[in-house]
Length: 444
Picture (spheres, rainbow, N blue to C red):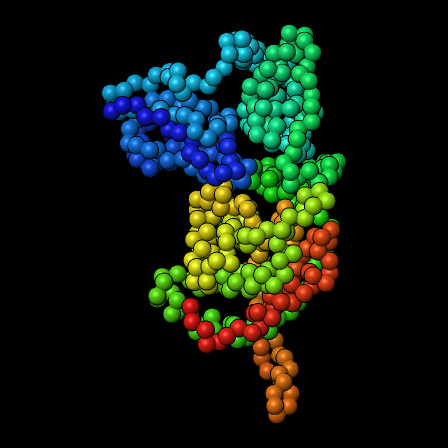
């Protein structure tokens, strides 16, 4: 069979590159069509790339830890009789001869280097708010390049990320006694221009005594940085409302078996909460905004994110796009599909981006309420707590009585730069109203 290139696929309009994290196959291995051969990571999500054909891995064109561009060939697959061979010219990275020579010299210098006294430690990298690939970290450690030097470099990768080519060029320049490359600030995306400088890293925690040191994985670092950035960007205020959802609970208990038999899927409370939030956003469109400097950007699309816990313990927020165009059945189907694929690490980058409002269900862990952190660049987020039975006063024509009702707390955190208490409070109250006024005869 003719040799086939494995191309890094397009993973969404906002994603132009990905880091090769783990090759699941090595050169000479047999692969089946659609069998996963490599794990990749973007700034938004981790995923796998399948083989486009059945055959044998002839050549891995990109090393683990390196960044590949969308549309770039990352491997070659051939038939039984084909032998591994060098990268074809068409698939080779376009590098000028002088640069190629510099890279070769620098790589040789790396292999021969033994002095690592000034090498940055893993802990030092954790204090940086920039992302560096494992390969870049390895080169920096081997050559004694400090984290401060790396942080000062303007990389050629996306958003100024330092790539292998950048660090090797810097190293070659430094080795030859030349001046270091000019350092210029990296221009951040427009929505990030208003974000303040990252605070100084906290003092290192003591590691004496009976302890275990656990290195954060890549996703946990991204989550940590995003949460800190959100608190530094937005002054958070949280309003609470307790809603009587007895009619809703009774309706769902009656309908969930019907829905399971008819659709083959579970009917959870999440799509019901999302529908109420969508209705409230239509009533209060100034909740569906973002901030860019002194400008307020009002979003016409209503894209609701739903925070989901992964088996690893990390958090991801898949987004239901144009949720206002879906009925309850459509929202339920989308919620179940995104939740299932999130647990199986099958989400695409575009499916966790573009959100305009986020829902998080802290009640799934038995919590009654929470104070969620805003998912930037949105300006508000709602947490729903556990539904609890409580004694309550029931008003009737014959007078007040005491009865057992189902209650839930709604916690609404919002950005006080642009959402004041009146709007934030009215919004969460309106969501509660939609839940309390549930039609117990409704069909789905």
